[in-house]
Length: 327
Length: 184
Image 1: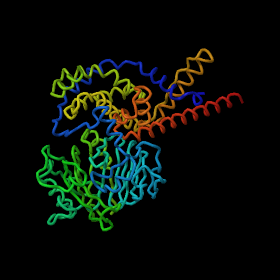
Image 2: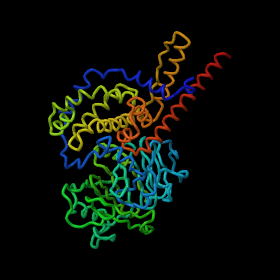
Image 3: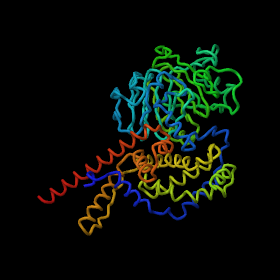
C-alpha cells in the first residue's frame, strides 16, 4: 500500500498530476473587475510593508531568526529571547475546555518557558483563560495558537500572520495581545506618566492625542461586558525628534514607548511584566475597555510587520468580539 | 520586464497590473486548488489575492520580490477560504474507480488514498506540502511564503508528512477491514 512507498515521491507525482487543470473561464476578468473597483492604499498607510521581499533577504533573516517568539511589541523581551518560535497549526495540546491544561514540556510556546500556562495550537472552539484575570472566554477558528496566558497577559497568534524582527533579535508575530491594567508610560524612563488616569477613557484620550503617533479618532465599543474605546495607531513616517528609551532597548530607530503593567503581581522582568510600545512598520488596532471586574484591559490586534493589516483585522475581529469578561 | 511592470503597477498603472495578473493567474489557481482541493474556493482565493495585491502593492519595497509576496498573500487567502469551508457542513468525497489491471488498480488506489488523506489534512499542512512538493520551494522560500521562521517550516513539513502517512495508514486499515467483512 501507499504507506510503504516513497511518500514524498508519490505526493510530488500526485500534486503534479492534479495541477494540470486550467483556471475557470473568466477568473482573470472577474478578478480584474474587482481590482478596478479597488483603490490602492497609500504607501504611508502600509508603512514599510513587505519585509521578506526577496529570497536572499528572506534567507538572511530566516537564518538570523534564532527561534525567538513574540509576546507583544517590545513587551517582556526577557521571555521572547528564550522561547523558540511556535509552530502554529501543529496538533493541539489541549481540546476546548474550561479547565486548566498546561502544555507539555518542552513547549514551543512562551508558556512552556517558565511563563505560566497556555494551550499552544488551538482547535476551533471556545476557551477560558487559565491565568489571565479577569477570567476571559474567547472563541477561535482554525489557525490560531495561545502563546501565553498569565495574570496580566493573554497572547493569541495568527498562523497566517507575519512576523517582525528587531535589530536586537527580538521577534514578534501578528496576533491578538490582551493586557491587564495598562498605565501610560514615560518615553524616557520605565515609569508611569504622572497625570494620566487609568480608566479606558483616560488612556484612550491620551493615546488618541499622542504627538508621536498617527492615531485615528476614538469610537466607543462594548465587548464581552467591557465598555470603552477603539482606535488605530501607527508611527508617523518621519523619524521622531524627542528621545525614547525604546531606541536603546531594541536598537530600533522608529519606536514609541506607550504602556507599562500596573498589575499588582507584575515585577519588572517577571512573567506578568510588560512594557508595551509600537515599532517600525507595525500598525495596531487598540481596544481599551473597563471590564465588569473593575480592571482596565487593553486588547491589541497587532500587525507587527505592517504587511496585511486588513487581513489580520478581518481574522482577529470576530475573535475579539467573542470575548466575554467574567465579573 | 516583470520588475518594470511591478514598478508601473505600484505607481497605479492598472494595465501593468492586469499584465502581471494574467501572467500569474494560472500558477496562483493551481496552487490554491491544490491547497484547497476545491475549484470554487480556489477561484475565490485567487480573486481575493489579486485584489489584496493591487490594494497593497505600494507596500512592496522590492519589485523583484513580487512573486514571493504574491505567494504569501495567496496562502493567507487560502487559509481564509479553508476556514470558511470548515464552517460549512462536510462534503462527501467521491472517488472514481477506473482501474483495469492489477498494477493500474494499485496505482489508482494509491492516488485515491493520497487524495482522501490530503483532503483531511489541516490547511497549513496542505500548504507546506504544496510549497515543497509541487513548487519545489526551499525551506527559506517556504518560510517567506508562509511568514514563519525556517525552523517552523522544517517541523511543519515533518508534521504534515507524518499526518498524511497516518491518514494513509488509517485508510489502509479501513480498506482491510472492509475486505475481511466482504470475505466473511
